[in-house]
Length: 552
Image (cartoon, rainbow, N blue to C red; front, side):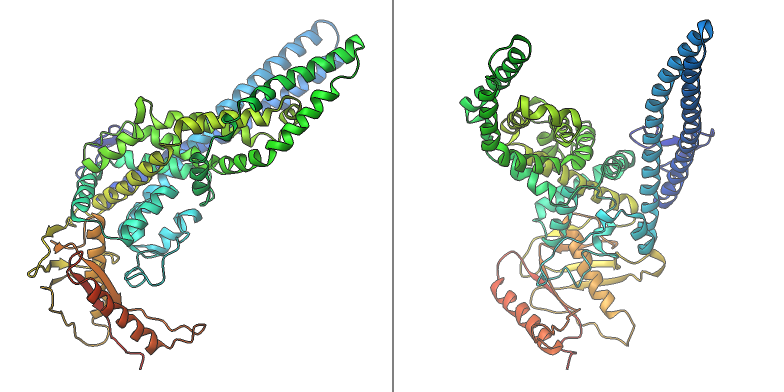
């Protein structure tokens, strides 16, 4: 449930007052502040209702128990009245449990939206410590990055105060992987322009972006490796469907076993149930290991499906007119049936897999070969969707990453989208009013910078603590953002498609016997070799070198 009034966010009305806030007339930070207050109010209202329902539930339960005790003690009409009251209160208690669960879900939902708005404030303020405390642990865990990456470590691509954190809440594993891959590898100019167009479309869809993130945040934490195991399972052979005779045996044996048991118990027939029983043990031994492996792979995906199903359901309703969005929307709405419906069916099967430990299932499973039949149902889903399941997950990751670009564009309306130039002998970077994107506005010093054409260099000199390194990082970080297709912290940024190499934060390696000076020499050699290898290929290379060879 949302307290927003419309998709365009033209205005919102507080549920507790007649005040109307025009979202188009206030700053992004003020917008987050107002929304945080509204969701905090809705959260407190739901919490108060939940506490009242807890008291009512306890009172109803105790009164029902007392009524049933009186029914046992009393006689005649009073006993009948006590029994009727007890049964009525029992029904009321069950209804209260259902209502209470709904209210508690609403309480958590509003709390999640409140926290997402608080994160928006922290991002704009560059309050990195506050943001770190607000984010759940699963969203702060770093992804592995090659230590020899040409710029990731020097330009703070990932970490507490990093470019990754600028992009708003990316709450699913596919989204986090996609965004990080974009930050680590600049896109072609055409792809970057398409992403920028998508970011402009998503910029004003504040309600949709918050709800998309809330669905992902609202779900239980999933094992980051569960996605890989699920995709490997989904694309593997549907082996139970390849053995028709085994499926036929699995259908016949339970019927034969039950018939033999009934004949032995009620009609004195010989104990022929031993034969189908032994046959079933043979079937179980043949398939149990593969079934256990399949169940493990899909069961680990349960928490993620809790997020993916409502997220894909929401994305199916988004307009997605920008080409980058439209392409992903077609994947989500594939084959005439929305992806969320197919994943919802899988989620129900995963729930059954997860409940295999309950007493009823565990008691009946060996006799009825329930695990094998559950494996058959999973394989039917797998055979129907193996070719497109990865596309759904990739589409979700792409759209969530694009939503992060839209969030950055929304949070910084004064930033500009890059303009791409043709690569060539006259190509250069023109960046008037460029600043470091990780610094707050009140401490971000803007500079006019021009780098190029190829074969030239920009030498930055100055006294200690004058901002030389920050300027170099400002140029590099904004070029990384441009390569993603995101807005940049500059009045304007014109640049060709380029590759970035840096030598700034070099460290020695005691374990490998590499001194600081040697580490810097190795880095410079790597850059020189890259320059020679890349000459004339993939456009120019931007080198950012800070205090070279200062380790001696």
